Every structure is written in C-alpha cells, then in structure tokens.
Amino acid sequence: MDSGTNPHIEDPSSLRKRTRFNLKCSSAEGSCQFNHTVESSGDMMERYASWGLATVEAIQLPSTPAVVTADYRASSRGCAGMFVGNSPAILKVCRAIERVAPANVSVVLTGESGCGKEVMARALHAASTRSRQRFVAINCAAIPETLLESELFGYERGAFTGAVKQTVGKIEHAHRGTLFLDEIGDLPLSLQAKLLRFLQERVVERLGGRKEIEVDVRVVCATHRDLHKLLQEGSFREDLYYRLAEISVHIPPLRDRVGDAVLMARHFLAQYSGTQNRPIKGFSTAALSALDAYSWPGNVRELQNRVKRAVIMADGQQIGPEDLDLTPAPDQPPELDLRLCRELVERTVLQRALARADGNLSLAARMIGVSRPTLYDLLRQHGMRT
Image (cartoon, rainbow, N blue to C red; front, side, top):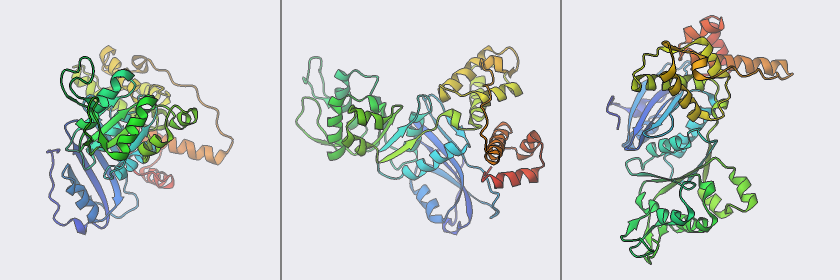
C-alpha cells in the first residue's frame, strides 16, 4: 500500500457529484495508478477502499463540464516501461482494465512487441482482489517444449532423470494469485490440451504424480500474434481460445497514441538523468517534433532505449533530435474531405500541445496561438478533457 497519503473519507455515500479519484495500488511485484474523473456515487468509493490494496483520494470538483484530465500510469519493477499518457487510445484501455480488474475472469492482452503487455498485466493484478497474492509470469516462447510442461505443472521426485526432489509448477505456485502466460500463441499443441483441462477443472497433476491438486488462480495471457489467424491455421485450439479469452484487451502501439511519446520521453528522461547522474534539463523543440513525428516500430521499448542512450551520449544539457538518432517522418498525403481533415488536424495539434505543455493550459494556448477561452472551446468541441 502506498503510504504517502492516506486521506480519511468521512462519508463516502455523500460523494454523488462529479468526483476525481486518485487510486494508487501496489504489490510486491508492481504498482499502478489511476487518476480519472467520473460520475460516481459513494458505493464505488467504498468498493475501491474495501479492496484493502489502495489509498483512495476523493476530491469534490465543480459540476462544470470542463472538468478534465484522465491520466494513467502503470509501472512495475523489472518491466520494460511505464504507461504514461492521456491519449484517447490508452485511456480506453485503462477504462477496460478498471472494469476487468475486480472480475474473476481470464484475460488475453494483445498488441505488438514492446507496447507494454506485461506491464498492463501487472497493473491488472495490482488493481484486483488478488493483489496481495503472487503474480507468477512465464514466457511460453522462451522455454523449450520438453521443459515447459514441468515448469507449468511441476513434477514429483523420480518422475524423470534428474528429478531429485518434488517441485511445484508455476500454476500451483500462483495459487490464489495471478498466472501470467506470456506469448501464449507459441504454446505447443501438445500442451494446449493439458492447459485446457486445468482451465476447465481447476486441478493440476504433477508429472509422475497421481494426485489432483486444486488450484485457485486467475489466468492472464499475452501475445503479439494474431490468435484468430492461428485458429484458422489449426495451430491453436479453438476451445482453449474461448477459455482464455473471456475478456480480450488490445494494447495500442505507440504510433496510435498521439502525444504520449513526448510524455513518456519526459518520464524516461527524469528517470535516467538521475540513475546515470547526468545533468540533462530537457528536450529541444526539434527533438519534441521528432518524437511526435516518428512512427516507433519498436514501441515503448524503443523509446526507452533511445532516451537512455541520449541521456548518456548528449553533449549539452538539452537533448536534440541527433542525440535520439531521429529525423521527422515525411508528411502523409491528406484526405480529400476538408471538414474531416480540419477536425483531425485540430485534434492532433491539441493533443500534442497539451503533451508538450505537460497539461499547462495557458502554455498550450500560447503554443497554438489562441486565447485560453478559445482553447477551452476547442477542447469541448473535440470532446477532450484535460
């Protein structure tokens, strides 16, 4: 539990108006934070607090429609990155995670490599009722098929040559917690049937054993592969898919999260300038433009790598595009519908200005050359809240 703040809420049931929640969840493996504005009643506050895993801050806000920002962060020790952003694409994912976390259902996370599927899985675990229990992860593509079965299900002493003692498998080890099966699309067919039986019966048998062991575990899977295509090819069992994918959440690539690359770059800059003991003050305007323009084929992992290298190699106190080894991407040809083009450009400019201004509306208004009231009107017009 985050011990930084622990506000006392006298009467949660009185919070019937627009309320901003700051939900901080932590466990031994990771932490997550949800900051969002919702129409909510006190029973939600009581439900969050009853999880026993979070500090909940409720701040009453004015009932004006201009109440704004939703920001989500999910971080984990040893993970490749941190979700930091306020783009509509990532906020949609965050709302889905908030709904799914308390439910006892299996979840499949899909998305390209490097977009943060394991980080999101840990955030889901930390926000669930199982957060005080283990989060056990196993990469199905990294372990040879001959060893994967014993890793998942465990084995008894003497089950095979070299089995000198009884060993509990990953599934059994995750009892009452969360089992994360990374790269589930690479699970061999020979093991898919055995995993299906576990999901149906919720019991495991160790290799060389005869005893059925009951296991209560939530299963979260991730893959960068197209499972529907694997189903058509016959390399993934359809019955297993529907057992695993009770809920499916797609993590968008970084190129679809307008403005988030700048926010995350600033986060990584603050992180690495401290750990590397480098006096880097920020990014140049050209670097911010390059960060926005680049398509990020390697997603968050690539962004993290480039910022870390730039922090180490930069000559001055400000990082330029050359330090990031980036050049602006060529402009794409515009659509022919003038109204749609104007709306798309306006929304993109607003998102990027808010990201570069780090949420400062006055600075964002100056960046795009409008007054603050005009900026508010544009945000309302495009359904954006900041």
